[in-house]
Amino acid sequence: MKIDPYVNVDAGTMNPVEHGEVFVLSDGLETDQDLGNYERFLNMDLPSVNYMTTGSIYLSVIAKERALEYKGKNVEVVPDIPNAVIEQIDRAVAKANADAVVVEVGGTLGEYQNILFLEAYRILKTRNPKSSVFVLVSYLPIQNGGELKSKPTQYAIRTANSAGIQPDFIIARAAVPIDRMRKEKIAFNCGIRPQDVISAPDVESIYEIPLNFEKDGLSDSLLEKLNLPKGSRDMKEWTTFVNKVKNAKKTVKVAIVGKYFSAGNFVLTDAYISVIEAVKQACAWQGFKPEFTWLDSSDFEGKGAGARLKELQKQDGVIVPGGFGTRAIEGKINVVQYCRENKIPYLGLCYGMQLMVVEYARHVAGLKGAHTTEVDEKTGHPVIDIMPEQKEILKGNNFGATMRLGNYPAKIKKGTVAYAAYKKESVVERHRHRYEVNPEYIEQIEKAGLVFSAASPDRRLMEMAELPKSKHPFFLGTQAHPELISRPLDPHPLFMAFIKASGAKNR
Image (tube, rainbow, N blue to C red; front, side, top):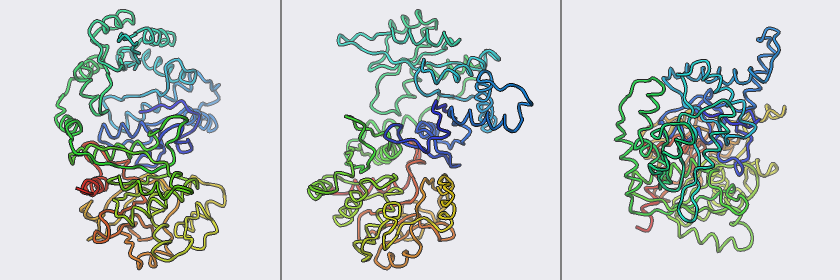
């Protein structure tokens, strides 16, 4: 479970440049990107009850008060807000029939907005001291001389103590592994056993982290303190995957063309973290080491765009991921056109598929000025538009009700690139979008050569578009977000096919 201290009810309206990727669960809830990491590491789908924010908890308490469920009692921040947190944790445990639940509290210990969630843990611990443990993740800075400093960790423990909490474990994050002497020093000053200080050094791949924890016996210690029986520690499949990541020799160059990279003087890749991880997973299973290039779509517009487009020839494959809004859209369309005309493997995700349809309509189907109404409401050829029933809902400014969120089924045409990837006709994919391929233009676009290789079961919604293998090594877009369900031990078929095509380029 993840607790976010934001007053937002969910992550749907958060700016990806500031907050990172919005992850969508199978039941449609828009959450923090950490839920994506949980699903990837656990290889399972999580329900919406596993995510809460300050806003959602307050909203639930207020709704309960308005419904007279408190039966006239005064409703107070303490204990009613912490109790609502505990109630949601209990619901999550019951729904999963779980033996244990890991609850991450977002932010940093000592932040004002986290205090109510720490209070919830204190109450839980008081009610049943043996039912829960507190794990503190603390960063140990390293000085120029190479000495790890534990004072910030000691101070963090004092902060936890001031909230009535004594941590059971300390995950010691540092650039290097923590030696025995440092563990004993931290343990002595922080009131825990040396074996409960767990080393978490920097690693080449995040997928090494569980294996590092096992070196320090974290799972056995956790089970012991939770009075749970020790199970199998066999991580053969996971170890196989990690070894594939580390031992990959061949390089495949993948460019991600987006518009959520710039964060001051730094490049923020968290906005596309699921895409990045899906590429890494597909690469590992095919013996490739990915070499990413982050390209801002605004660089492919205006003066000098032509020269920059030619730089795409250096890439083995190009991905245009999802997004919203009007900024730098022509740059993305120019990238799509260049990849199509120069036979560079291309994967379009959500908006990346919609703009692929726009580009093809304009430059091949002869629909001059074709566009998406998200960008140009007055376009003469709205090849991407909101469906009629959605327009009715939008009249009441109910924007949320017009989004396709969560899992939706699709039927795939046999003999297509998509079918060759999935090797089956029926699939379920996750979605997060509002606009669709306009049914009025499907026939005309298909006559021009673009194949709509997957659609909703009733054929009203086009789910995938592609060029046949005879015309292009890999030119495919999907209305869904397949990156959201790609897993280390089960990489997504579309990413596997894309990497296979990209790896074959110029080889």
